[in-house]
Amino acid sequence: MNIRHYKLFVVAASAAIALAAVSCDSKQTKSSAGTPEYEIMTLDTTSAVAYIEYSTVIQSNTLVEIRPNVSGYLEKIAKNEGESVRKGELIFKIRDADYVASVNAANAAVKSAEAAEANAALEVRKLTPLVQKGITSPFELESAKSNHDAAVAALQQAKANYDNALITLGYTEICAPVDGVLGRIYVREGSLVSPNAAEALTTVSSFGDISAYFTFDEKNLTSQRHKMMFADEENGRNKAVVELVLADGTLYSHKGHLERASGIIDRTTGSIQMKAIFPNPDNEVLSGSSGLLRFPLTYKGCIVIPQNATYELQDKTMAFVVNDDNSVTRKVINIEGVSGQNYVVSNLPTGTRIVVEGVDKLKDGMVIMPKEDGAASDSTAVK
Image (cartoon, rainbow, N blue to C red):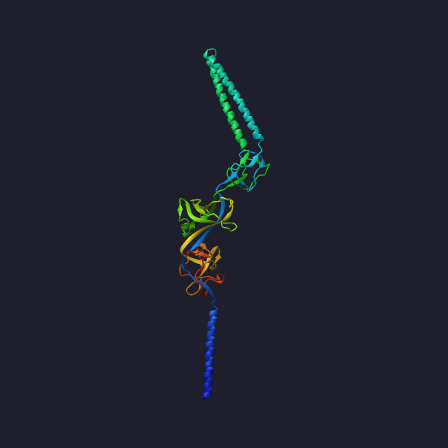
């Protein structure tokens, strides 16, 4: 073979091999580029302080309806809605002319009965010596004594009627039964009020402790969170701290404690009612307010995942679990509590790999290229 031709053949063959190698590398690069890269984390146990939250409605421990005991036209409204009142302080005044007249009439009846009783007593005293001397029949004396007894009874009845008239007159002044704050006033001056009216005149919400009611699903009665919430229970009262987040998002300055409001499960809702008791010395929280109850619970040996590793689907919280072949599977997670920006979960075992970013772009069964991110950041973790 000609040496020149041999060299040309070697050069051509080398070029072909190099071109083939470049082509293979290009295919491998293209294949890798087709698998999207996602950050993942491998779950391990840790300790954390998490908060369980429940919506609540606040009620005063003493909420008194103010209703009239007598009928009449409202002459005066002495207080305004939302104003503080003290026990015994006047709120409403009913026109009392008719009731004053009844008192005067009852008083006159008492005086008349007193006079009748005095006359009957005088008759007894007059007849007694005459009977002793045999001048008058004993029958007349017995009749006089009976008349006196009847006069005494009539006097007692007149006095009772007078006392009742005074009490009824007193009902024309409607006063606060407890220290507290007035609610909405449903009547105006000049209105005709009656004890038989369906609606109260107003309400008084007392100062002091307030109750925050919430419902607890019976499915969670045997859960870890329930056991933790009632771990220190004694005589129906729990020593654990309960926090109240007000409607404006601020944390109420006083802590509360948990109590059972009912020991019976409501079969229509499948839940049991609970309540937390909070002090309210400055009447900062008004009856009827809404808020959130927060129960701080310490978890040890728990699994914590970032909230941004989850998404909501049909009222369920989901996460993507990474399988051994790097495919992802959608999984419903059971949230035990919220710890900072993380969830404490109960159904993901140690060693599970989950996607922690871009979960909104994933689909069930999709293959990814995992990039290890690390553990969940938890500012509330227990060290």
